[in-house]
Picture (cartoon, rainbow, N blue to C red):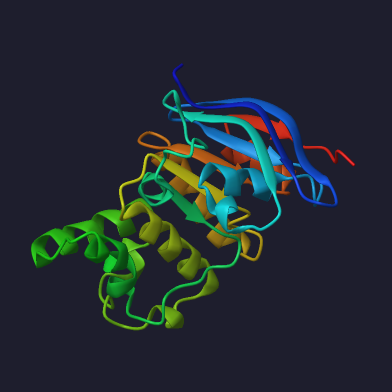
Length: 223
């Protein structure tokens, strides 16, 4: 299988502690990698390094390499904004915009300059279908996203990430606050999405890691 992301000797240090130490990891294209381990072991930090959200953290020193398709995304010449268009991220707590379901999904495409309504309609339907949400909301696309249930909001956030047509999807404990039915729908969606995307799933649920991922990496505390 082709390697999509190659992490080499990645170390992240703060002034007080070492968060990640000499991480070496190969992540294969069109697979789901599960990350698990105790709180504070650096799982979420790794997500932040890959999507370069770590840039907004102060007093952190990052060494090593993170290669995506052979290109080191930690290189200073890499534009992090353009990089994040290639990487969709879904966090533990769903944060829908205080807008309609439709406007949540098209928010980023509109920022990219897509204005044709036919194209926006297609993006909305395709993204919501991939997130296993279309059938539940297709008749109320112009109602507030805040009226959706927690599980639906999380799938909406997934659809919003998919609207940019990324290559990689990062999920940081996306099911931590969801009921079993909503969790099952997320997992079902991921199983289909891996046909087109490379996925990293952070979860402290060992059963979920066993069910939903192809490979798993266990993080330990380094301090």
